[in-house]
Length: 283
Image 1 (cartoon, rainbow, N blue to C red):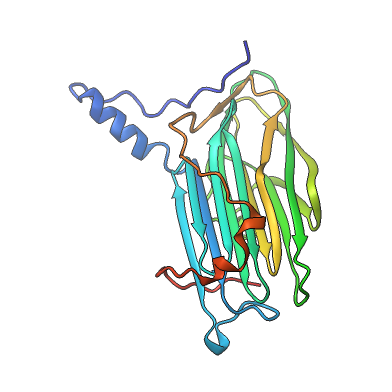
Image 2 (tube, rainbow, N blue to C red):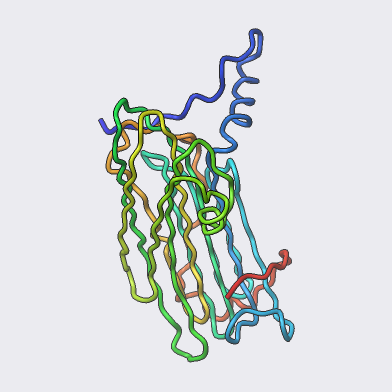
């Protein structure tokens, strides 16, 4: 039978007389907060002649979901394009599963991003090497009507060895600034054009008995007059998880709708209007 990663012990023994329900509630809030999270965000913009701007009445809208201590998140924004993102901690090893999808018409813009963090403890009695395999599967293409085209997918995966890690959905800031003194490694995968492309990668790192480490994954889709579709996921898999214990291990999965066909979206998406909070995003 395949090994199933187990959840970490949550809290020390509760004080005598404390009700079981109260113990469970305190456990979920107090002990797991620093160790995992999932975040998803979608953005669309109405004015992107070469980069997205608020000049000449340009509008930028966003939607987001999840954060620290969330095990799944889903967000979509479709005012001026099509943007959809999903992040979850699931599968046999409760590793991050990320999905993003974005499309836009001429001089419109759309971004989607998904992010997740999970902590593990190595329970073996001897030093070991952990291998983590990565696969980014997606499609990227431009529309034919000319103008400024810029569509791409990017995935970043990092390993941080240590007992605690700050929460930041900007992996570069986390890696180079907030966790500058931790032992760590990362890799990046890209798809700039093509249909049903698979980009493979891996990370290997050494652990001593009892050590903790974090897996942090980020994936972004960017569309300017075209599409970037990685709804077939960034997937991560340990070659051997038999002596790893996840900080978060199991819940009811979020209900994620099937994405609309990119070919059916068309210019009609730009006619939709939702009263969501404005937010600038980089081109």
